[in-house]
Image 1 (spheres, rainbow, N blue to C red):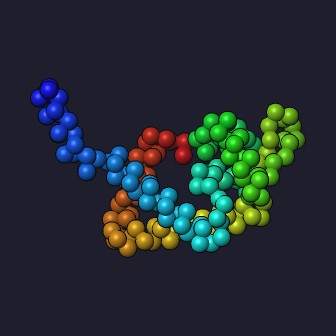
Image 2 (cartoon, rainbow, N blue to C red):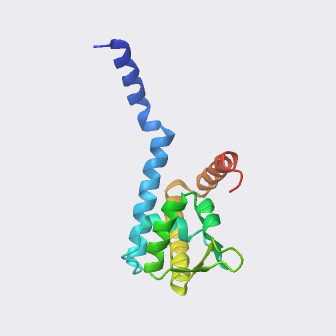
Image 3 (tube, helix red, strand yellow):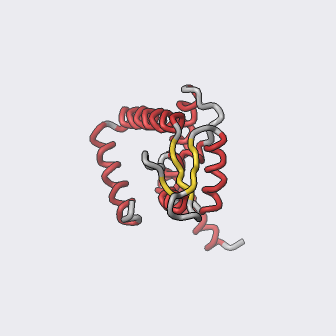
Length: 157
C-alpha cells in the first residue's frame, strides 16, 4: 500500500462534494430529466433530448448544414444522424442550397417551431423552479457568473 497515494485519494474524495464539475454535472442531469419530463407531458414522447441541441440552433429562415454543426458544437457526422432523426420526426426539412451544391439548407417545419416554443416554455418553467429554491438575487448572480465563464471560454457565443 502506498500511504502517500492513499492520502491524496482521501483528500480528493473529501473535496468531491464541493467540486464545480460534479455540481454542474448533477445540475445538468437534473435539467435534462426535467426538460424530458415536461416535453413528454406536452406530447413529445418520441423526441430525443440529444436532438434538442441541434433544433434550437436552427434560424427561422433556415441554416446550412456546416453552419448548424458549428453552432451546435457537434461534428458533421453526428449532425447528419440528428438531422435524419428530426426529419423523420417531422420537425425539420432539408433542401438543396441554391448556390452551393455541397450544402443543404435545414429549416424548421411547423412541428419544429411548436417544439422549440414548447421547449422554451419548459426551460422557463425549470428556471422558475430553480429560482424559487435559491432566490432571485442568487439566481441572477449565478447567471452572471456562468455568462462570464461561457463568454470568456467561448467568445463566439
